[in-house]
Amino acid sequence: MSARDDLPLPLDRPALAVLVDVFYDQVRRDPLLGPVFAGVIADGEWEHHKERMVAFWSTAMLKAREFRGNVFGKHQAMPQLTPAHFARWLALFEVTAGTLFAPADTEALVDAARGMARGLQIGLFGRAA
Image 1 (cartoon, one colour):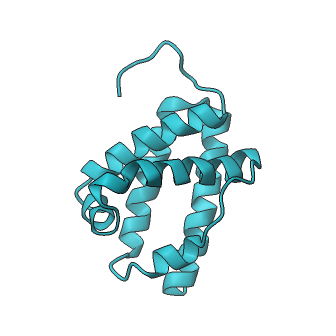
Image 2 (image 1 turned 90 degrees about the vertical axis):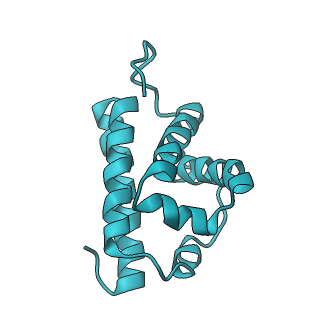
């Protein structure tokens, strides 16, 4: 990511689209997360996945009511997931959000991400790491 004059971004849908785009570009290159995502999202499906994630975060953060889906079911269908994957995902998310948003907005985004990750881990592993 390069330094940008328009940072921090406002917490709105266009900024969430930037977050999703930058974040999932990093996820795809990550040695731990990249192979997991490559196993479930084909190269030609990434734009669709990112659009769904913008809808997801818009719903979570802006109460946009755009996202409909079974988040737990999608993750449950990935038996290769471990607590280490969630920890890495959260670490990348926190850094990415922190480079794009003001501290208060970063905190809100990261709190939401941690809560979602905690719920998924409890459902998948019986506990949160």
